Image 1 (cartoon, rainbow, N blue to C red):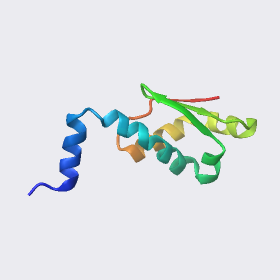
Image 2: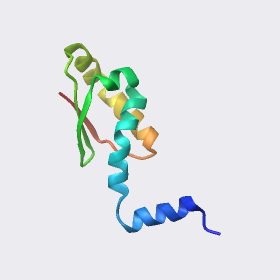
Image 3: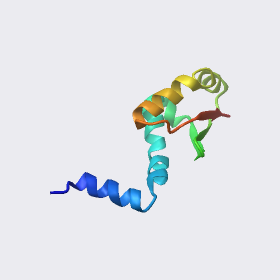
Amino acid sequence: MIELSELLRSFIASRHLDGELDKARIPKYWEDVVGKGLAARTQIRSFEGGTLRVHVPEAAWRHELILRRDELRRSINHLAGKDLVREIVIR
């Protein structure tokens, strides 16, 4: 008997929706990695071609996140279970 999860994975793969599903999950991964409070103070501008662009209006938080970019990228990829994010651009 085919499990529902297998059926859904097959449907998503057959429609080439993997990328869109990954893109939809990025905000949750971001929140999980930086925390709810900080996530509320940032805006994800885009996620295209492995590059995550995040707007951070407060200079102190922007500087902190710039210093932690590699750690954040690794954490997001760990949550995703694959190398989803190649680069994080903080502005």
